[in-house]
Length: 272
Image (cartoon, rainbow, N blue to C red):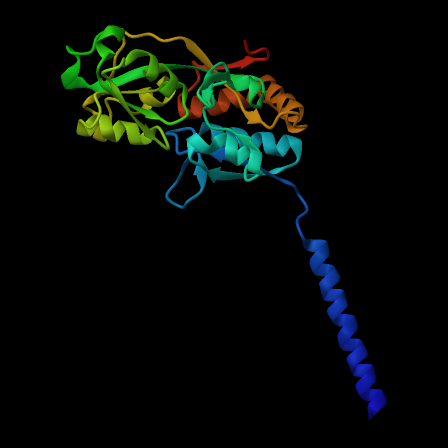
């Protein structure tokens, strides 16, 4: 009886090890690229089922296929983007990230390119001024912004611009994502918002925001969207190669047409 029991135990242990090894063999070893994002209309957002959609989301997934990585999206507070990257909670900042801009670090204006390594640029953008249509006669020029209350995404190019125009008598509200600024302009909590024009054009004058408009008379400098990686990251070169491939094979043009960005996508290999 003892021999039978021992034999039975041995067989059970062997089966257990077999299943364990099989389980290990089935484990997906594909590395993951975690992209730090905020909710950005038609760029990074979730559908009704909670799946990420939008131009940037699909763009990232296509890059992932080419470099052999799964892609996950981590929603972040934009003001904490560098902290998240340095902490390793995200692998890159991929969310309408303006490469040819500065951020104030410890009170000093610092080039973003000194803080991260940027991929090739892939989209052109500008900051723009959004107001309630009822105020179109009150805000027509940059001079009209002085003394006003601005709404901006904290840590954005829009914040940097607003700080230069509101003057000593003006004030600023900072939000974790740009979408909040639309609500604040609509409610009258702020006089104007500074935000990415590729976002504003998809929202102003439509639906719940039919009473908002872009101040066309105020034209700001061109910007370039790129992906930010940690300094010295090997991912930068790999992603650059993938970006170029997606421009060459027409996939970028296809995604841009799908989401209404066909007039602003452009490959920029050298960002000044």
